[in-house]
Image 1: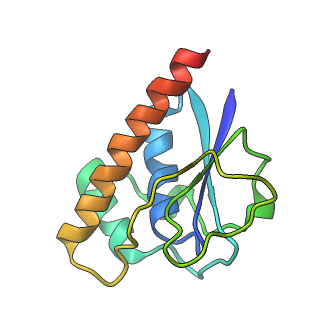
Image 2: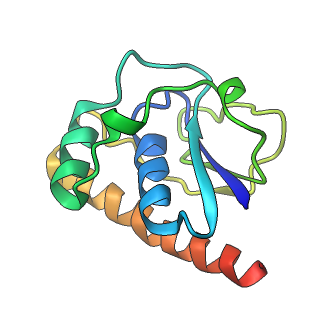
Image 3: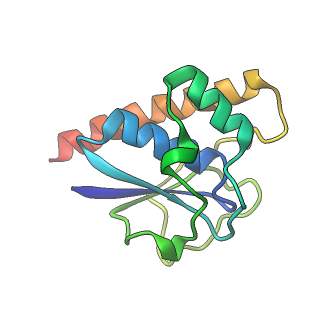
Length: 132
């Protein structure tokens, strides 16, 4: 099974949401990981709360902030958005989802980003499913 890594700088919000949605929507097609070039002591609490509300997923029970060196070498590497400077992970990114960081913004902003991640996750799932 392919390994997909979702990468952002701090591995506390967008990449964590992507890991959770990857496990939720596509675990039959690929393994999902998230990581960053830095870590935070905890996952973004607004992301945790809203993911629980929308999907019943408790990210704090199954996930934590990780460095790129803490995950297996990915077959597919997705950057969550390079508007603050893309981390170098030792290889080129397969895609850049170009998502704005919702940290510090409203619940509606979070929900828009989560919806975008869900849509892109379904597209990624379909693409990788068709490759196998």
